[in-house]
Image 1 (cartoon, rainbow, N blue to C red):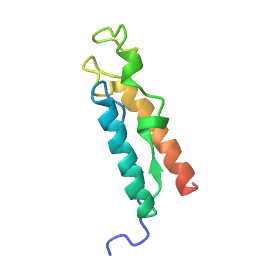
Image 2: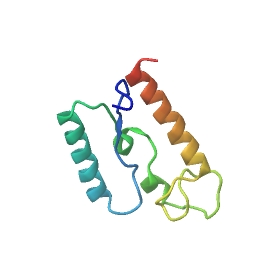
Image 3: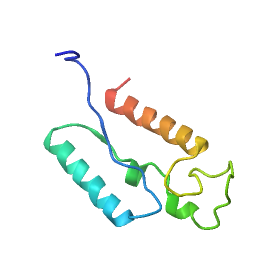
Length: 97
């Protein structure tokens, strides 16, 4: 074992502007598998408060005030910072540090 004390945390995918129903099904399956393996999960899909759907209404291209890029699929720099900080907070809570 390279890192026998390593802790595994599973992440569900972020919401995206397309295929929301399929993405939600995938997120639920990931959580189910993680539960079977007794791995903790950070549910970005439901709990990250980052939703490309709410942003798609009136989205202005190249706007720094949005959390997703205009394609609705990728987090902008602002969104990436937000989600990174949120994941770090969640991981600290899981790892109790």
